[in-house]
Image (cartoon, rainbow, N blue to C red):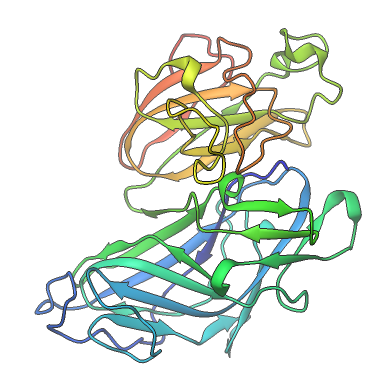
Length: 346
């Protein structure tokens, strides 16, 4: 399955207040300070073999750091809940979104304000109505309008946390790497969406990497071994790893060590991965958005046609073996890295 990462916006603006979590308790922030206004979001990137990934959200739960479990669906010192959403200007109890329509900088506002007590929140849970194609489903390009069931374990996606600044207005992007988060389950012919691979990034400090990929790296007149491919547009993927000085022989495709017990301990799983997209003008592009600042290693491969999200496939990264770049990404950086590199850096 060739699935890229997706991102999609759940936003908060300035219209409706969600009651803040109470003071004291076991929360992790400064409860004496003024609350902050927070926007939460996801955004989407291209997907190779799917045409729709639709989810219906019926609740959002936010838990303060070190707080008790949120299980009574009422405001408390530890938890806050959202159970109403905005859709096309209406207030609704559930909101249905096709994640694949929200690519790049596109977004969909579904919550019109969250006012939260300042401090740390260690968990955000999205409640999804799953296993019913009236609410959530996947469509494959190969099977047309056939709806495939979408399963979310425990009916909710347990995501990471964030810190709310006192008196501020913040936007956080919740980004999923679908190469890690979604897998096909052939027995019941369904897809499973998991929270594995998610990251939460403050938009104010978020960085991005984008660029063009010369088709000479993978087309029929290009560089070995990619010039032997049956379909030159398939299997071209950018992998991004955290850190510098990584041993190239350990760079791996997406896998889950909890599932694939045979994966070597030295294998380095990617932090993010993006499919290289064929544009209408004949160029090939990629973009990895909403990255936290830090050191990264970027590698290209033309051999990732079959990247199982749970099993280490073991294809060559990088391929061709020259397409690897070390980057130091600063806050708010928008780095352009075209492949192949001309000067050796970008």
